[in-house]
Image 1 (cartoon, rainbow, N blue to C red):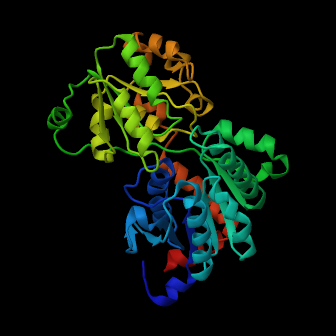
Image 2: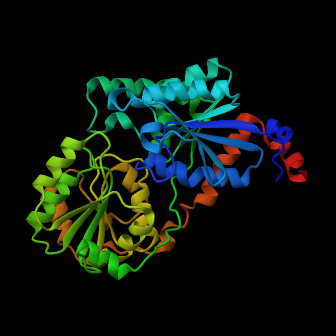
Image 3: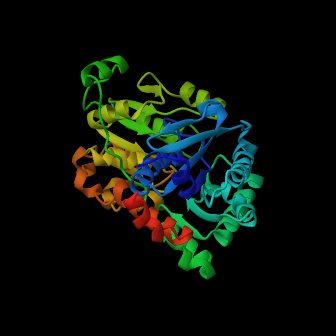
Length: 385
């Protein structure tokens, strides 16, 4: 593909914002973008994809990641204003560099949809969950997030929801925009395990098939305190491994670790190459969240055949597993009974997750891009180039 200036000017520039950055940054939105955007770049050479990140997480240098330009902008680190300020600056940057469209992720960043439209850009909004339901937010923050959802849905040219229950909920809440709201799921990326599994398990003091695994940010609403309590009370002799870190919840994370006994291990955030080993070696993957969109970590675990036990919230139910795989959300006694249940009850096979394929997801997302930006007509010219 030629890269001369004239060719570059013909390309349609799309800015993607609402994330902390890619690659290797903790978070569901970040994992989603890390898998999706390079696939869009590969499928659509007529698109110039610019991922807007935040300097505190990815540094100050512009970079390229598998065909996607990654541009870091200044951002505050206070949780209450970080997303709003960084998204505002991202929209302004998109206008400055001539973006035809912005792809906004998450409802908080949806507040910027009217501004993007005012500045002459098309808007695609991906909603990863009803974030105002997360336990970590106070009353004011929840109100702002609800406004973000309303602004985003009402001003976006297209809205993508990552879970069917969320899609239905939004179509019912915004019937006048229902035809612009589409379901495109999260995916399960191919996981490549690197290094020696035995050495990795020995490093963490683990034995294959003799530990429980949970993955997620250490923040309220993920249900890890419930899992630790249930694990202790159940009499389960297997170790419990909780993989993840904390961006803004350092005090909560420290308290969580203090409440855990010697049987609970916190290895911090781990790269996918390490997670691949842990998923394959775990006796059971447990996701006790009180709120999720469509959980990528559960998709990852299931895609390699790790047994799954999940809270019965809508986002987890959207995975379509049998009822035996779910316990009552927030109920410690229900989780204790589940942990004491036979392991065979939670078995899954990788083919059960074949529909959550990132290539299909990229194709569906690209169709939405084409509908919004009108770029499909340019494809023959790019193919000839």
